[in-house]
Length: 206
Image (tube, rainbow, N blue to C red; front, top):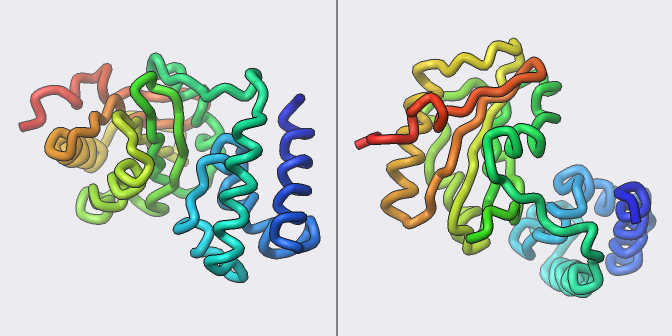
Protein backbone atom coordinates (compact mmCIF):
# COMPACT_ATOMS: atom_id res chain seq x y z
CA UNK A 1 0.00 0.00 0.00
CA UNK A 2 1.67 3.23 -1.08
CA UNK A 3 1.41 6.61 0.71
CA UNK A 4 -1.15 7.96 -1.78
CA UNK A 5 -3.54 5.10 -1.08
CA UNK A 6 -2.83 5.35 2.63
CA UNK A 7 -3.78 9.00 2.73
CA UNK A 8 -6.93 8.42 0.71
CA UNK A 9 -7.90 5.61 3.05
CA UNK A 10 -7.29 7.71 6.14
CA UNK A 11 -9.15 10.65 4.65
CA UNK A 12 -12.17 8.41 4.10
CA UNK A 13 -11.79 7.06 7.64
CA UNK A 14 -11.73 10.56 9.14
CA UNK A 15 -14.68 11.69 7.04
CA UNK A 16 -16.71 8.68 8.14
CA UNK A 17 -15.71 9.06 11.80
CA UNK A 18 -16.45 12.79 11.95
CA UNK A 19 -19.50 12.55 9.67
CA UNK A 20 -17.94 15.22 7.50
CA UNK A 21 -17.27 15.35 3.76
CA UNK A 22 -13.76 14.39 2.69
CA UNK A 23 -13.14 17.95 1.50
CA UNK A 24 -14.59 19.57 4.64
CA UNK A 25 -12.66 22.10 6.73
CA UNK A 26 -12.24 19.68 9.64
CA UNK A 27 -10.81 16.83 7.55
CA UNK A 28 -8.56 19.15 5.52
CA UNK A 29 -7.30 20.89 8.66
CA UNK A 30 -6.37 17.58 10.27
CA UNK A 31 -4.32 16.64 7.20
CA UNK A 32 -2.77 20.12 7.05
CA UNK A 33 -1.53 19.83 10.62
CA UNK A 34 -0.60 16.16 10.40
CA UNK A 35 0.33 15.56 6.74
CA UNK A 36 2.00 12.16 7.09
CA UNK A 37 0.38 8.90 8.14
CA UNK A 38 2.90 8.54 10.97
CA UNK A 39 2.00 11.97 12.40
CA UNK A 40 -1.71 11.26 12.03
CA UNK A 41 -1.48 7.96 13.89
CA UNK A 42 0.20 9.72 16.84
CA UNK A 43 -2.27 12.60 17.19
CA UNK A 44 -3.76 13.13 20.67
CA UNK A 45 -7.20 14.28 21.83
CA UNK A 46 -5.64 17.49 23.18
CA UNK A 47 -4.19 18.33 19.78
CA UNK A 48 -7.45 17.60 17.98
CA UNK A 49 -9.35 19.88 20.35
CA UNK A 50 -7.30 22.79 19.02
CA UNK A 51 -9.05 22.42 15.66
CA UNK A 52 -12.22 24.41 15.14
CA UNK A 53 -15.22 22.11 14.81
CA UNK A 54 -13.79 19.28 16.90
CA UNK A 55 -15.21 18.82 20.38
CA UNK A 56 -14.42 16.30 23.10
CA UNK A 57 -16.70 13.56 21.74
CA UNK A 58 -15.46 13.91 18.17
CA UNK A 59 -11.82 13.98 19.32
CA UNK A 60 -12.32 10.73 21.24
CA UNK A 61 -13.97 9.14 18.21
CA UNK A 62 -11.10 10.14 15.93
CA UNK A 63 -8.42 8.87 18.32
CA UNK A 64 -10.29 5.58 18.76
CA UNK A 65 -10.58 5.13 14.98
CA UNK A 66 -6.88 5.89 14.52
CA UNK A 67 -5.94 3.38 17.22
CA UNK A 68 -7.79 0.70 15.29
CA UNK A 69 -6.08 1.81 12.09
CA UNK A 70 -2.70 1.64 13.82
CA UNK A 71 -3.36 -1.95 14.85
CA UNK A 72 -3.98 -2.78 11.19
CA UNK A 73 -1.04 -0.82 9.79
CA UNK A 74 1.15 -3.06 7.64
CA UNK A 75 4.81 -3.80 8.25
CA UNK A 76 5.73 -1.43 5.40
CA UNK A 77 4.53 1.43 7.58
CA UNK A 78 7.01 0.76 10.40
CA UNK A 79 8.37 3.86 12.08
CA UNK A 80 11.35 5.72 10.67
CA UNK A 81 14.52 5.19 12.72
CA UNK A 82 17.04 7.98 13.31
CA UNK A 83 20.51 6.40 13.45
CA UNK A 84 22.58 9.33 12.21
CA UNK A 85 22.40 13.01 11.21
CA UNK A 86 21.90 11.79 7.64
CA UNK A 87 18.79 9.88 8.72
CA UNK A 88 17.46 13.01 10.41
CA UNK A 89 18.10 15.05 7.29
CA UNK A 90 16.38 12.45 5.12
CA UNK A 91 13.29 12.64 7.33
CA UNK A 92 13.25 16.43 7.51
CA UNK A 93 14.71 17.56 4.18
CA UNK A 94 11.34 18.97 3.10
CA UNK A 95 12.17 21.84 5.48
CA UNK A 96 14.75 23.19 3.03
CA UNK A 97 11.93 24.55 0.87
CA UNK A 98 10.30 26.64 3.61
CA UNK A 99 10.63 30.41 3.20
CA UNK A 100 10.62 31.08 6.95
CA UNK A 101 12.51 29.44 9.78
CA UNK A 102 10.61 26.56 11.41
CA UNK A 103 11.80 24.90 14.60
CA UNK A 104 10.80 21.24 14.74
CA UNK A 105 10.95 18.55 17.41
CA UNK A 106 11.12 14.84 16.59
CA UNK A 107 10.09 12.66 19.52
CA UNK A 108 11.84 9.28 19.60
CA UNK A 109 11.36 6.11 21.61
CA UNK A 110 14.07 3.88 23.12
CA UNK A 111 14.78 2.43 19.67
CA UNK A 112 15.13 5.95 18.21
CA UNK A 113 12.00 5.41 16.13
CA UNK A 114 10.16 8.63 15.28
CA UNK A 115 7.02 8.87 17.41
CA UNK A 116 5.95 12.30 16.18
CA UNK A 117 7.03 15.47 14.44
CA UNK A 118 5.94 18.83 15.83
CA UNK A 119 6.65 22.39 14.67
CA UNK A 120 6.97 24.39 17.89
CA UNK A 121 8.04 27.77 16.53
CA UNK A 122 8.03 29.75 13.27
CA UNK A 123 10.26 32.80 12.89
CA UNK A 124 13.86 33.86 13.48
CA UNK A 125 15.53 31.57 16.01
CA UNK A 126 16.14 33.15 19.41
CA UNK A 127 17.08 31.33 22.60
CA UNK A 128 14.67 33.47 24.62
CA UNK A 129 11.75 32.62 22.29
CA UNK A 130 12.31 28.90 21.64
CA UNK A 131 11.47 27.92 25.21
CA UNK A 132 12.26 24.40 26.47
CA UNK A 133 8.70 24.17 27.79
CA UNK A 134 7.26 24.24 24.25
CA UNK A 135 9.62 21.49 23.12
CA UNK A 136 9.47 19.17 26.09
CA UNK A 137 5.73 19.28 26.75
CA UNK A 138 5.17 17.28 23.55
CA UNK A 139 7.96 14.85 24.44
CA UNK A 140 6.67 14.29 27.96
CA UNK A 141 3.09 13.81 26.77
CA UNK A 142 4.18 11.09 24.34
CA UNK A 143 6.56 9.46 26.87
CA UNK A 144 9.55 9.94 24.56
CA UNK A 145 13.02 9.03 25.81
CA UNK A 146 15.05 10.85 23.15
CA UNK A 147 14.59 13.70 20.71
CA UNK A 148 16.11 15.40 17.70
CA UNK A 149 15.47 19.09 17.15
CA UNK A 150 15.92 20.88 13.86
CA UNK A 151 15.36 24.15 12.09
CA UNK A 152 15.87 25.41 8.57
CA UNK A 153 17.90 28.29 7.19
CA UNK A 154 15.96 29.71 4.21
CA UNK A 155 19.19 31.29 2.97
CA UNK A 156 20.60 27.82 2.34
CA UNK A 157 23.67 28.49 4.49
CA UNK A 158 23.69 25.89 7.27
CA UNK A 159 26.49 27.47 9.31
CA UNK A 160 25.36 27.54 12.97
CA UNK A 161 24.79 31.02 14.40
CA UNK A 162 25.42 32.06 17.99
CA UNK A 163 21.67 31.79 18.65
CA UNK A 164 21.61 28.28 17.17
CA UNK A 165 24.33 27.25 19.60
CA UNK A 166 22.62 28.95 22.55
CA UNK A 167 19.34 27.18 21.80
CA UNK A 168 21.19 23.87 21.55
CA UNK A 169 22.83 24.36 24.95
CA UNK A 170 19.61 25.42 26.60
CA UNK A 171 17.60 22.48 25.30
CA UNK A 172 20.36 19.98 26.01
CA UNK A 173 20.66 21.14 29.61
CA UNK A 174 16.89 21.09 30.08
CA UNK A 175 16.76 17.58 28.64
CA UNK A 176 19.37 16.36 31.13
CA UNK A 177 17.26 17.66 34.01
CA UNK A 178 14.05 16.08 32.68
CA UNK A 179 15.62 12.81 31.56
CA UNK A 180 15.03 13.20 27.83
CA UNK A 181 18.20 13.25 25.75
CA UNK A 182 18.55 15.66 22.84
CA UNK A 183 20.47 13.49 20.40
CA UNK A 184 21.12 16.21 17.84
CA UNK A 185 20.19 19.65 16.56
CA UNK A 186 20.10 19.75 12.77
CA UNK A 187 20.22 22.82 10.56
CA UNK A 188 18.70 22.22 7.13
CA UNK A 189 18.92 24.28 3.97
CA UNK A 190 19.94 24.24 0.32
CA UNK A 191 20.07 20.43 -0.06
CA UNK A 192 22.54 20.17 2.81
CA UNK A 193 22.55 20.00 6.58
CA UNK A 194 24.72 20.60 9.62
CA UNK A 195 24.75 18.52 12.79
CA UNK A 196 25.51 20.47 15.95
CA UNK A 197 26.31 17.17 17.64
CA UNK A 198 29.03 16.45 15.07
CA UNK A 199 30.32 19.98 15.60
CA UNK A 200 30.62 19.31 19.34
CA UNK A 201 27.91 21.65 20.61
CA UNK A 202 25.96 18.95 22.46
CA UNK A 203 28.90 18.13 24.72
CA UNK A 204 29.87 19.78 28.00
CA UNK A 205 27.11 22.37 27.86
CA UNK A 206 27.28 23.07 31.62
